[in-house]
Amino acid sequence: MQAGVVKKETKKMKTKVKLLVVSGLLMLAICGIALQAQTQTGNGNWGGIMTPISGDIVLKTELPDAPATSPIYKVIDNGTVSYCKPDMMHIKKNLPSEKEAIDIAKKCLEKYGGVPKDAVLTGVETNYLYGMNTKTGEVVEEHPLSVDVKFEREINGMPVVGAGGEIDISLGENGELLFLSKCWRSLEYAGEVEIISASEAFEKFKKGELIQKPMSQEEVEVTQIKLGYYAEAPGKRQEFYEPVWIFYTKDEAGDVMRLCVNAVA
Amino acid sequence: MKKRIAGILAILLLLCTVVPVMAEDKGIEYSVTTIEHYQYMNDLDPYGSLCYEKVEYWLHDYDGWTEEFHETEHDVEDSDFGCSNSGYQGLDEADFHYHFGHGVDEIWSTVICLWDYPFYGVVTPLEVSEKWDKDNEWVLLHSCKVLKDVSYWGDALKYSHMLLGFKTTTYADEDLPDNVLRRAVQYDYTIIDAYYYGTKQTYGSDVQATAIADILDQWYNDHLHGHGTVASDEYPDDDVVYYASWSC
Image (cartoon, rainbow over all chains, first blue to last red; front, side, top):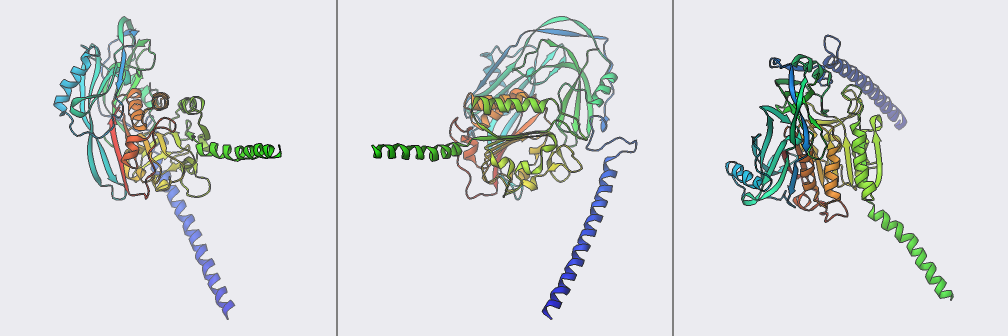
């Protein structure tokens, strides 16, 4: 009697397992079809999250006219200074306001050659250390860390992008200097070079022929295109500042990136 | 005489047992995962290899750490990210882990992309939630956007100390591990100072970096082993983490 019940239960169990396997396979098939449909575009190219640099780029600006040539500059010296105070990431009690921070930053720079004539103030931002409950996502603490002031370079009105074209200053307690990085290479005019048109550059951009390789692939909107220069990071050796086409892009999260394509023909 | 020989033998025996235990206890290990070639995404070569060389130089060649593992390309699997609490525990078997590869912001959370993403290879924060509890202290995710979801990824830090990465898109550049590890190893910076400095020196202002620590004491005091204090693990584990993001 007991064996019969066990057998019956086993049979029931087997049927359940079979049903589970079949429904599992069906679910997999449906998911597979849905994924295929989501990721393959009408023209047969892989789209969506897979190849935005070559596919999902929305041009939200006009391609600008370009001069036939643009100046190239030879780097004379690296002009790099940096300063870093230990334990700079500790919580602060009394940070300067963002308005005050600009003047303090300029004063700090006096010791390091001052604010160059071709520097443009591009940002002031207060950084905070947050305590977050990971289960609820709620921010439970907020402490000031630093106020960052940034200057970027413009050469004859053309923007310079990259870590080597910036002055970056972090200020702490009562305006104390926590961090300073200034990379302002001395340049010498080295003639003119022929440059490619914005539309040629856009083709390169779509193919992913960028100076820096982004480590993500999502849909982007190109909101602005400018001719400028790319400056390598402070520790890197760079012999020339050559013209680049800078594509200002915005992703779905609204983050703006500046992706550069070599503009030399 | 016999006593002397016995004494020497006893010392030798002690050395034979204690020295390996000490070496094991010292056991400062790092692990690395790098993906340069993707089936459906842009390739990132040669930067994965270049970044690995920098990690190897600073931690192994310069500082004498032991390499626990270096997995590359399609050999990089979910299990390398410490998704399990038993058996092979991936990055949780080494003190420091460096990962290089794509990351994306999916609808449900940010994820690490493996070589065949989006079909199979993906590491989600759910897979590592409260899993890093063995040997790991620090993880550097050199990938885009992964640390945009602080609450999800921060949940991995059970007894592990810090997670370093990016909130926005970032770029493939060997200067990142070089700048960060140089400061931590050669100049004895705290982990957070080294990461702040390293990210600022490597990237322009369009990149935003993020660091997450399990407790404030680790945020303030953690240095790489042998370069200063290392705070204790959080015990018992709570649900609060500390984080900051900054423009590079």
